[in-house]
Amino acid sequence: MELHIKECIHRNIQKEKIKTITRVLFLILFLFSLIINGILFDYFYLSTLASVCVLLFVFSSKKLVKKNEQITSDLVIIDEQNRFFYQNIIFEMNDLENYVSNKTTISLFFKDFCLVVERNEKLIRYLDHYTYEGDHGNNSKNKNMILLFILLECAFLSLSSFILGGYYCLIEHAQVISYRAVILEIVKIVLVLGSILIAVVVKRYLNKRIHFPLYLCTIILYFALPFIISDHITQLNDDYSYTLNNHEITIYKDTKQYYGKIYDQLSGIKDDAKTGIYKDVIYVLNNKKIKTYTLNENQSTKKNLIAQYGSGYYKDQEGKQCIFFIEDEKCYFQKGVQMEQVDPVYVNDEMLYIEYRDEGYFVYFKNNMEIDVYSIESDAKYQLAFYSGNYFDEKEDEEIAKKIQEREEKNKAIYQRRYEKYKNIIQQEDISNVQSDQDVVKITNDSMDIYEVVLDIDREITRLNNDEGATLDVQILSVLVYSKNENEYGIYIQTRADKDGESGYGYDEVILMKKYGDNYIGTRVSNEYMPSTGTTNNGAYDTSQTTKFLYRVKGHEIVENGW
Image (cartoon, rainbow, N blue to C red; front, side, top):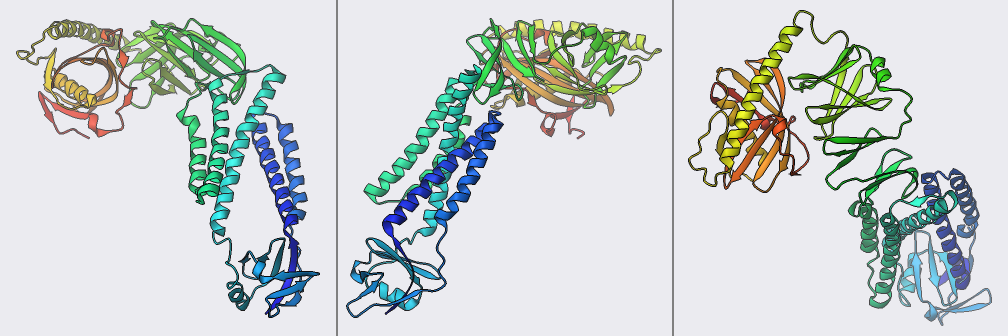
C-alpha cells in the first residue's frame, strides 16, 4: 500500500500550537468586550487602543493557523508487516489511533505524530481494518465552538463592564446606582462559567454531549435576566437617570450603565405620591400638589414664555375637545365643553404646568405650531395644532359663554342629585326593589370584564336621559378604573357624542358603581365626585381604536350603531 505523505507534525508541538491559538482567541474576545464597553462608558481612547491590539493579534496569529502547503508529497510503501519508514521513524499501522478525512487529505494520528497524506478510497478501506474514522460530529463540534465563543464573549462583557465601572467610580468619583445590577453581572459571569463546567463534567464522566442545548439556553437566559430582574433605574436621557428608594429620589448625571455621579436628591416622597417623568422633567404629585425637577437650564420666565407664543389657540385634531388658548398673556384651557382661565406654573423654557378641574396637565411647546398636553392623573397625551386669530368670535362669544354656563349649572344640579341618590341606594343590602331611572340605573351582567359593565351602565344612562328623542352616536374613548374595594368602583371615562349626524362634544365624566352579585348599581357624575381614595385596577384603557365601545341611541331605544 502506497502513502503520499504531504506533512508530518509532532503532536506535542500541535498541542502547544492549539493552546497558543486558544490563548490568543481568549485575549481577542476580552479586547472586543473592552471595545464595546469602552464605547458605552465613553472611553473612546480605550476602545481605539483595544481595536489596534485586536488587529495586531489577528495579523500575528495568521502564522499560527497558516498551514504548510506542499505541492509535492513523499512516497512511502507500507510493507507486508504493515509498517513503513519515514523521516528515520518506523510507523506501525497497529499503533494508528484514528484518522480524519476530508475531500483531499487524510490525517493519520499516531501516538506522537500526525501524518497528512493524500486521500484515496483504497487507503480508507485499508485504514478501516486498523481503526475508525474519528471526529464524526465535526459539524456539531463547530456549532458548539461558536456557541462557546459567544458564551465567553458574554462573560467578558460582564467582566469588562464590572472592571470599567470600578475604574469609573475610583477615578471619577462616581457611585454605583444599583447594586442589584452589579450583582446581576456577577451572577451572569457565574452562570456562563457554570454552564461550561457542567458540559465538561457531563462529557468526561457520563460520556454525553449536552454542549449545544446547554450553551444555547445559557445565552438566552443571559440576555433575559435584565428583563426578569429590574434594576430600578429610570433613564432620563443619555446622561441623566434617577432612582426612587426609601421615599427619596436620587438624580444621577454622567450615567454610564449602572454607575453615575449624584446630581441632586428629592426627599420626603410619600408612599401614595405619584412620581414620573415627562420630557426630561421629574414630577411628584401628592395630594393634588406637584413638585417638578427639570434638567434643562432655565433662561426664561413664565411671562416671556407665554408672550413668545403670542395670541392664538391650539386645538386637537382627534375630536377630544382639548384646547389651549392664549389671549392678552392670559391662558385658557378646555377639556370637554367648559373653557376656564388657568394660572400656569413655569416649569422650564419649553413647558408649563396647569390645573384644570383638579387635574394636572403639562403643556409642552414643541414649536410655534404644535404643543403637547399631558394629563398626569390619566397618563393621556394630546397633540394640539396652532390656529391663528381669536378663539371667541366677537358676535358669538357672549352667547356661547352663556349657553356653556347654563349647561354647566344644569349639569351640576343633575350630578348632585344623581350622587346623593346613588349614595342612598348603595347603603342598602337588598336592591331587589330598585328600578332604573334617569339618575341611577340597575343592570345585570355576569361578565368578568369590568369594561363591559362600564359600557352597559353608560349606555343605559344615555338611553334613559335621551328625552329629546334624538339619534345619539356615542363613542367611549378612554376608561380608567379605580377600585375602592372589591365591590365599589370609580371610573374615569372620556366620551364623544354626535347628535342627529352632526359633530358633537367630548365629555369627561365619572361612572360610580357597586356590585351586588351579578347586579350593578351605577350612575354618571362629574369628576369632582370621584372617590379621593382607591387603588387603580389597571392603566388607562384606550378604547378609541375599537368598535366595541361604540353605540347608537334613538329615543329611548338602543339600535345598531352608525359605525
